[in-house]
Image (cartoon, rainbow, N blue to C red):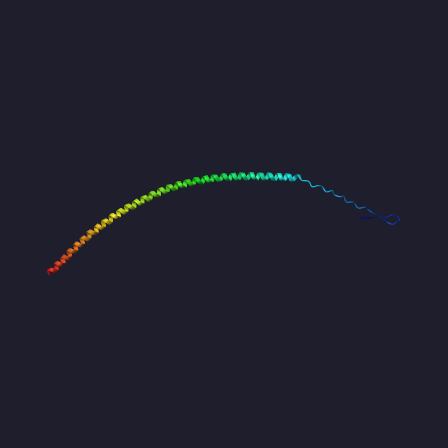
Length: 145
């Protein structure tokens, strides 16, 4: 309340009361759907759609890259198998050549062993003959004395 003092000639001051302002009653509005919510869902759906399309494109590109990598790997495997087969052929040829050389060396060593045995037998026979002659000479010398 606000008081206002006014002077009246030789009278008591009269205090007037101002009436207070009445509050207006607020009428509640009914809740209505905002139009922005609809547009937000449309934007979200559009962005989801864009994302799925991009992911599909990425997936397709990845699949294509994998196919290319697989085909390249298969080609490399074919080349490696071919090179390995050629290497096996070369190694077999070298092994066969080594086995042939070994067989020839065995034959040569067997011939040498046979020759050595024959030579040893001849030497042994000569030595026996020499021993017999020496013993006969020794026996003859003993008999003469």
